[in-house]
Amino acid sequence: MSETIIVVLVFAVLLGLEWRFRLRSVRLGTALLAVLVWVYAQPNPTRAARRALDTPPAERVTEIRGNRLSEYAIGVRTMERAAGEDAMMFDTERLLSVGVLFWLACSPVFRRAHAASATEPVSSRGRNGLASGLTSA
Image 1: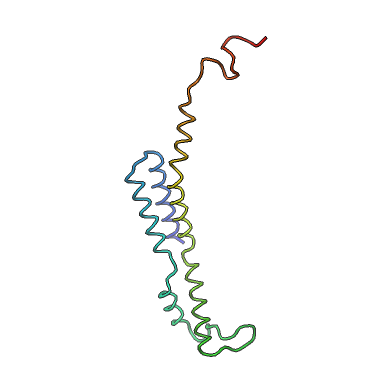
Image 2: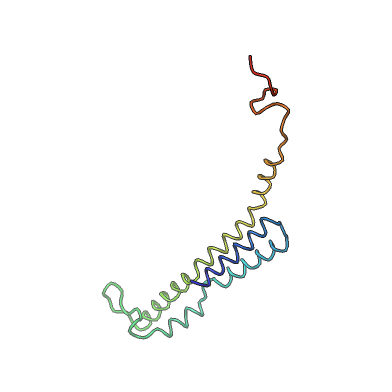
């Protein structure tokens, strides 16, 4: 849990710096960090296999719906459970890294839309299209 909070804070600071100062180096570093976090957070079959092998016999999957399983099926089902647990182990970090990459992909569009509305010229006429000081007849 504490690693997740640290990752969230690091990404928040980097995205804030990137948004405010538009530094390409920060943008590139944030993208690379997000990809590294995503790769690290992927499910790992070797890690799941180690966890399945270390599972005590009392905690292994030995039956399904009341039917006793063979020794081979016990190993397969225990490995399936370990792989599922491994896939959920870093799901928050995976989702966060994909969100950061999505933000980095979309933020230039948000900036252009914001910049275009901020630099829109003001006409000599007022908001309602009438010359200032005049009223409609």
